[in-house]
Length: 322
Image (cartoon, rainbow, N blue to C red; front, side, top):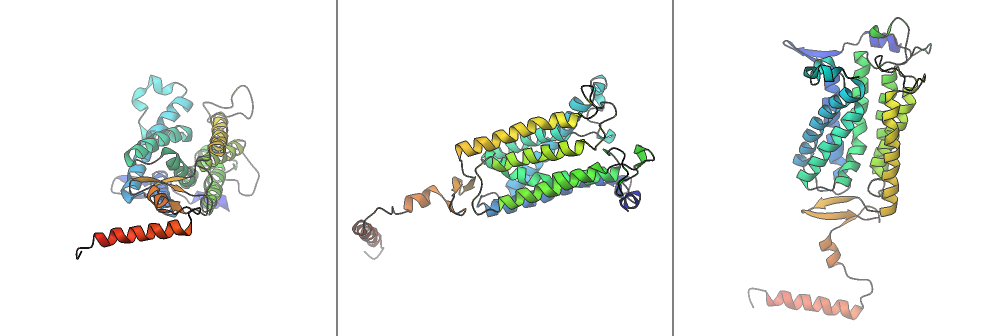
């Protein structure tokens, strides 16, 4: 049945005059738009003062970083020297070729620039980006499926798909496996964790994202066919470039979580141009001014009453009818 559905799909979503709008491009556009919307909602829930303009700056910087990083990553990791001999083709996007790992690096650079512009802590921005990124991953993998690219090994399972560029035998729809695991499942896990009344320490969510993506990607690589011009690595029949690039993500993700547990920094935000901390007691937010106004529980009743009387006298002295 899945094969029947695939045969009816067209990589071109619609045309505008001579221009063809493809599902692949729409996947990126819709992914960034939905991720931006989710980021805005998370900021509101975490009591982070992040304006719509701030979200737009983040999206623009991230889009540029992702596209450039994804393309350059493909050139370096999968180009096999071709683009060094044909440099004019490096930014010829009509030939296709994007690398997630390169895109992630470019995305990170764009996010850091955005954090500097918005004067927002990079750690908190990384947390929010880690939670929202699976949306785009899932949509782009679905677009890969529609394009009939990045397919898997041959299979006799009932949901096998015959891809035009993959021969006459049914193959694993590995793009949909990744869309489900790296997109839907990872997004659900991170989103539910972000709604905890007691938020994890800063760095945990991004660490979970890195580990989750890497584990799911490595798992799918066992049924996904490697790029024909690269094949399997080190003389094996199973090790792929995707696995090699994903393994360091596990180590980095673990590092983020260990660092979060050791430093125990709370999630941070901005309010009235000032840093505020999401407290551990149910996610309530307290600024420095709030802390200055709080009365110590050790104060005696006499001290509290004297303080109130002093404030009242000061107020009366400033009345215009005095």
